[in-house]
Amino acid sequence: MRHLSFTTMAAVAVLVSAAAVVSAKQAWPPVIETSGLWSAYDSTLSKAKYIDLTHTIRPDMPIWRGFGNITFSPAINKDTGQAFAYATDGFVANAYKLTTDQMGTQLDAPAHFNAHYAATDEMPPTFALRKLCVIDVSAQAKKNSSYALTVEDVLGWEAENGRVPRGSVVFVRSDWSRTWPHVDTDVFPQVSLDAVQFLHLQRGILFHGHEPLDTDMTPNFDAEAWILGHGYAQAEGVTNLHLLPPKGCLLSTGFPKFKGGAGNYVRYVAVCPENWPHGVSPGQVPEAPMQYFEEALVWNAQKGYRSRS
Ligand SMILES: *[C@@H]1O[C@H](CO)[C@@H](O)[C@H](O)[C@H]1NC(C)=O
Ligand SMILES: *[C@@H]1O[C@H](CO)[C@@H](O)[C@H](O)[C@H]1NC(C)=O
Image (cartoon, rainbow, N blue to C red; front, side, top):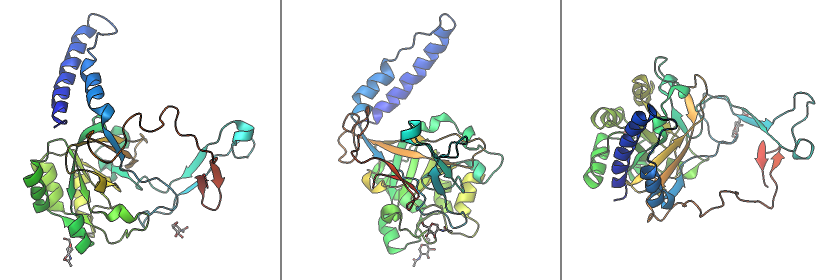
């Protein structure tokens, strides 16, 4: 399988950085062997299928009932009191009133529940690219809308796909997000405390993720409190998991760095094998320049955001 080449790639990367340290003492800029990563990109990532696992942040999306609605507005020029406009200023900008950093597709920082662990700006850059496992409990969730992922579900996945790799990300597919934004935020498929403890303590995963906006419906957020309270991160509000194979994809994670943030607004993108039927590859879509739309983007006061119609 293609993902085996990443083990080789990681080994090459280690050797490359060791070589860089040695040569850094002699010359600047150091001579770095770039062929490992760039050839891996050419042979694998450049042909891979990229699939967005992210909801668009918009004022009319579901949000946890404890937080107020968010609002968007045009950014105002403080000198004139007028909204910036293409005609008068050459550009537009937006202002967002966000009632929480816990909304949409997220990566919870442990500081969300524990003041002594990392906030969003303190999370390591190594989260950027990992192996992705997808455990499908959509059949169970269809029968029971509050079904909770069990250790047996994880072992069932392993019987078919091999051991969950150390340092990987595990997403739980429930199909809860398939009807987004028309979803039930009060009753939803859960992840049990036993299952997350097994994944972290027995398998050493980086983090797990789920489609609903919360991990569990227990009165004290048992699973979420254990995860974050012990310094682990977790993904919430992920979508499009029905487009992924159970193993073989990578997960790209990108998020802004708010000082002292308790949660991240995230763009998750699955990077899947070349022969996977879903997703797009670099060069298959307009990238540089990007897509041109005949219909202009305009501020829609009724909708409360900029749109093309
Ligand atoms: C919040 O947004 C929802 C969905 O758009 C809407 O139904 C609700 O009325 C809003 N609540 C308030 C207080 O504006
Ligand atoms: C649904 O799953 C939850 C979580 O495991 C459980 O507490 C509940 O009893 C189940 N409901 C039914 C009807 O099986």
